Image (cartoon, rainbow, N blue to C red; front, top):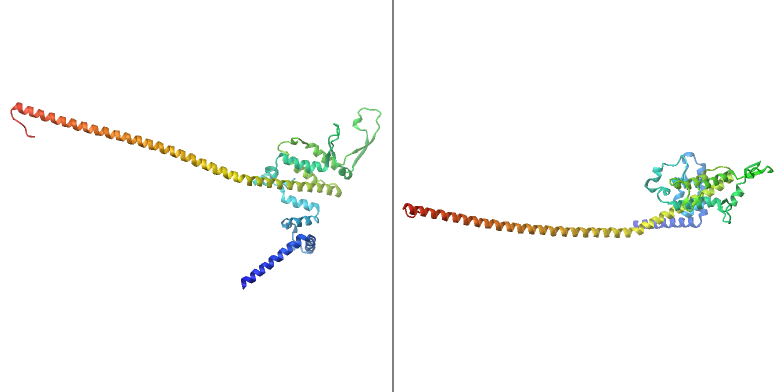
Length: 345
């Protein structure tokens, strides 16, 4: 009876959990309102009782995280992303490279190749801010800032002077010269310093992996005014999301490759083990044959030696018998010669 009550209570609890999860996924706004209510309570709570709700967000379902992120400011989103991805941090807070690169934790060091790094930098930074003019003509075939940048980054530097392109024309009048916005000029200078060619990012071999991170830091750390800051922060956040998606996809492909190579590796190991067994048996058979041959030769030699010993013993016996006979004949001859007759031996 007690076991039945326990089973009923457990089933009831599971049903309630399933209903709550289903309601949360189907009506996320209701869940957001609950979070907002808890946040209001937390604001009024004493400092010792305050809770850090941000720590629980990464453990929520993806649908809930997307809804919650809509209510979080862009700076908090970026800080949450950087906390989970320290390899994207630039500055004095960056961990030592030995710590980041340990156990392959830094994908910019152990996972991404030159093509991937170029793809991140070109599509995530350059093409988000600039477009390439394909109009025929040498002067026009280059990168230009997008129109949204010109609309946002209005020129903040104007002066009246004579352009240097006028050369030494003495009839040129002074006129208003407009320069690009300071932030736009900074972004364009970085693009020009690290251009993209068919071979990839134009930089030293040991700097290529750092170029996308440096480009990201320009979008995340540049401060001018609220409007411009928010615009470039959104661009930087998109770059972080795209980079993270590429890394996840690359890790998944590497995992599939390992899974695909595992049966092949096992077959290779079995083949190598079989070949080792064959070589061992072949060498053992050859050694056994050689040992049998040596043993047979030793037996033949021993047999020959025994025959030689036997012949020698026979020869010695014959020689001794012959010597004894000669001695006896000599004794008989001497006894006859002396007249004693035969000598009883």
